[in-house]
Length: 84
Image (cartoon, rainbow, N blue to C red; front, side, top):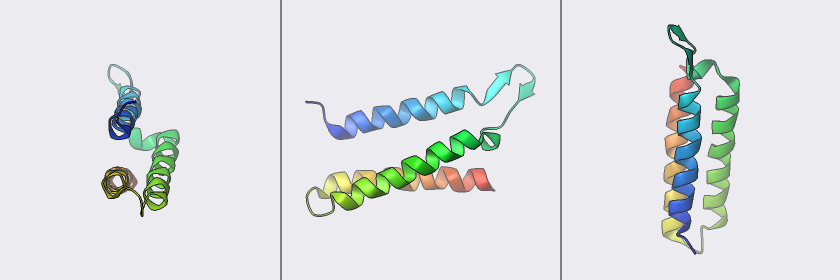
């Protein structure tokens, strides 16, 4: 069985990469990612999901909790930058 940290990191990277790919539609025509409400909703969902996972594992696996909290912090920073 693969390490859950590796699996989650790959999923997170794919989602972010896919979101970043879609932020520019045509050459010369720029659509910022901040204008994409689906991206914001997706990031908010991921943020809440990582926090829930961290709180559910609080007493079992400290390193995994730390991993989930770190991912939630990264997403929160992205969201804050998008809202500016």
